[in-house]
Image (cartoon, rainbow, N blue to C red; front, side, top):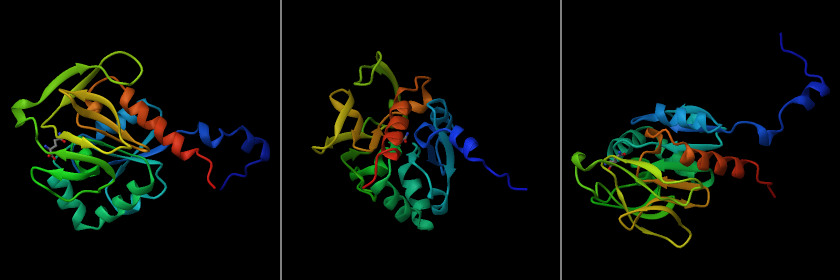
Length: 214
Ligand code: GLN
């Protein structure tokens, strides 16, 4: 039997802006479970996304690492690419590594299709093959001390547009960038125990969700 809600009960419910945002994680490949855990730790509800219908009602989306060519093959197959393009054109999105490649307007080495949402130019596998994967700790613009950054066959952000804020660099190249409601990292913050990068994204999602609409 559906339960009746009295006005008094309704008024005790958390106000919308205190509710946990609902963030999707593209769950085709890569370490989506680690992203989901990191989002939960940072105060969001995480939902796995494998088709267009699952994007409905989400407050934001994480595009994990993996192999961007494999992502593209899957996305092209069932129209998910177009649905994701529409989603990231208006909602918050966070791409890590291959996800960063998917968000970029410009991809090279080799050139390939993308969601073309973020004004960054990305070179794939710029640090060499698997053997060049690395864990580094360095400064960022996030509050708190240095951040551990796990790189796995990472791309390089070779250039950023004017509206893009660089939040961290490696060897003079951006590794964590923000453009309004979009965030991208060439490393894997979900593989470290530090939750500051996911916390930033969850805060961005809340900010966008609770923004007064005209
Ligand atoms: N090398 C991968 C690509 O080009 C990205 C690696 C990763 O996501 N860890 O798509």
